[in-house]
Image (cartoon, rainbow, N blue to C red; front, side):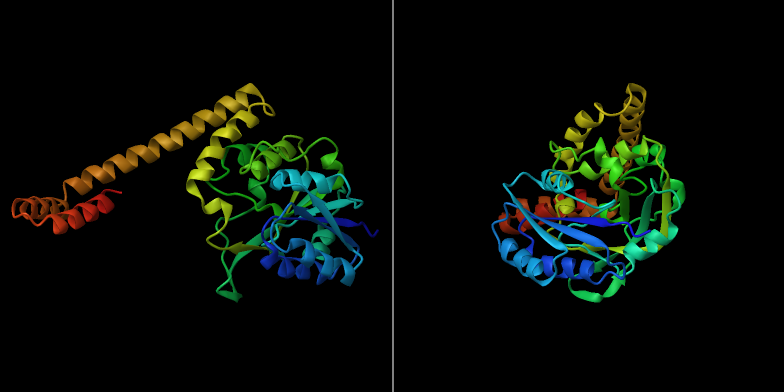
Length: 302
């Protein structure tokens, strides 16, 4: 058996990372693959970078589309893939050289999804691999865990998975979501009772950098709410209600813990001393110093 892997690499304004990402695909020890580079209407030099790789290796293919977001780019590529398996890879991440070969060594059920472990790497020191931000295990690869523990216990970077193409005959990425779209996809897959096989080796490398969309807190909160709207459409009412109740309970506990911390802070000697100093500087007319102290107190409250 020599199944073909279709690698989908969407790129929007990340051409500076694209060479490294595509090199990690070309370096794979398993050679029967194609790579669809999806230029999602990128304003940078994604087209030029992609063209270089298409000319270098015929297994690379270039697809240009109007900007529609990450989900739209991945879905466009799914329409033209010719492989038996699908590997997603964001343009700023990379794969270990044996990702494909090690995954196929575990496959017994051709409909199984192989989920490898992952690690982090930093632009400032690419030679040093960092521990993952969560601990993956076989026990977590099921519908219940993915639905109720996601974000609180773990998440699965999308390039950890090697998926049978047959899964995507009925499932696509939700184009209404600009974040949490991976989570919704994993939920839809897991509720089909598909067999997951965990490969405990860090074969997916996740770039840690400040411009990552997942670092934008306000953005993530907004799309968390949109996620609930879309999740309600694909899971049962009982599962959806349990999900909301669990999230409400967790967030209530977080607010309660924060309230206790703030109360303890206000009762601390340091906080009372700063308040006294603030009042004293105001009484003496030292407004600039008072403002600085007020900003310091505000930071402590946060």
